[in-house]
Amino acid sequence: MRAVHIATLDGPEAVSVVDVDKPTRTPDQMLIEVHAAGVAFPEVLQSRGKYQNKPDLPFIPGAEVGGVVAEAPEGAHVQPGDRVAALSMLGAFAEYAVCDPALVFKIPDNVTFEQAASLPFNYMTAHFALIPRGRLAAGETVLVHGAAGGVGTASIQVAKAFGAGTVIAVTSTDEKGKVAIEAGADQYVLVDGFKDAVMSATNGTGVDIVVDPVGGDRFTDSLRCLRDDGRLLVVGFTGGSIPEVKVNRLLLNNIDAVGVGWGAYASKRPGYFAGQWDELEPKVANGELTPPIGATFPMDDVVEALKTIDERRATGKVVLNIR
Image (cartoon, rainbow, N blue to C red; front, side, top):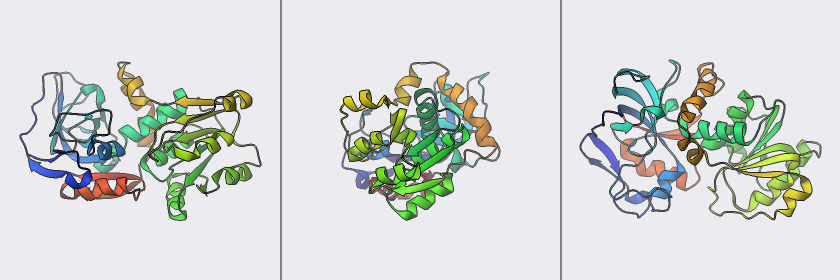
């Protein structure tokens, strides 16, 4: 079968497409015929050896699958022929991928394979961030950084679908602001001077929750945007630098900085992923959660797909079309 290989740690430009053997599942695994694969920031980091998960070289990257079950254990919740979204963790950038059945989810008929490959990481991360970690309550105001990206657009939609009153997007350009509005945000502000813009938009009261997958130098102003009992959700650091917080800010304003480590949390709790899917799936089926696809690439153009993310050109979700 054809697959993407990371054989050296020289960045996206060194990634290649090769012919390899089709994977063989164990009796407890599923084999998925991959139609589309989600592309995310971790794959860019993996191409440089900078991600926490460092597989032996060479390896097939890719964690998110939209496809069809080819083989499954007897009695599994999905069976051959079922259309699914899945988390392979590795190996998705290939014509076939092996998955743990606990990480395979049957998709509604209205969901495309490209959308299926866009759901697991971003929407489950956003759900974990906003609901159990962020304690989102009906009517609250949510501020989303990196709002035109995959996690950002997912956070906008999850916040609205689960009861947020107002969602304010933070973007670097007006063009990306329009992407955030199309994803469901009520309004957007530009990152330069966002604190003052947010305080103006909220009549000086601030927001209840900040979703921050970016990090960097905007962190302190994000804390300043919070009203009493507000929560800043630390989702990631796509901006490159890890900020530090002076905890007196938390004390004086009665606010929380909350870590969002979705994968580490869910992997220790059998059935957690399935429980999340049970909450998300009805809202996927009725269209409340519809992943915006920013760009699709054939497998042969995987370098360009990775560079689109690496160079901060991506809006919505970037997807590889495998078939």
